[in-house]
Amino acid sequence: MPKGLIVIDMQNDFCPGGALAVEGGDRIVAGINTIMQDASAVVLTQDWHPAGHSSFASSHEGKAPFDMIGMPYGPQVLWPDHCVQGTRGAEFYPDLATDHADMIVRKGFNPAVDSYSAFYENDHETPTGLHGYLRSRGITELVMVGLATDFCVNYSAVDAARLGYPVTVLRDLCRGIDLDGSFELALKDMRDAGVTLA
Image (tube, rainbow, N blue to C red):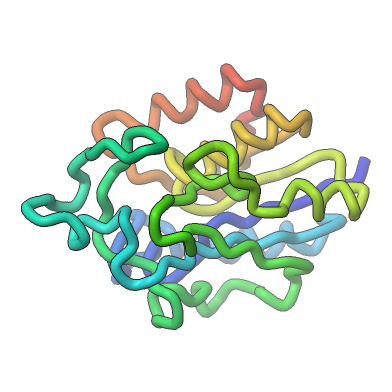
């Protein structure tokens, strides 16, 4: 069964020293590089926000990072400015073996809608094009790794399961933020969707 490896948001801003650093995010890179060699297809996702994105706390007067607001598509966490297009923070972590990638999916470039999932923007309707690409490559099973377990990995895995893919998330090659219990909630969401946590 052809397996696709989805490597989620292994970018400088999500690693130690970055604007939205995930603790230990840099420590999973070597393991990810190793398993890339066994995948039928490797897809990297890249958070790619324009300056002043609507998900940035700095775009909302009186709001601080990690505040929640309502958006037309639902609740939205406000983040520190991160992964701004063309900045060092948006670049892939330098040790990541990007030469193994068959495709790069950039997400979050619509200034009005955030995008956690590799498959859909946060309106849960606007596709990124990844599903069509995987189908055209004959990829029928997915493995996911990267950052962060409780946001972009979770949303991507749940969406993939809903699209009919058998999905495995390799927990030792992911790291989470854990915002007000979001980590355990994400694990439950993934299990409930039929995702295998390995």
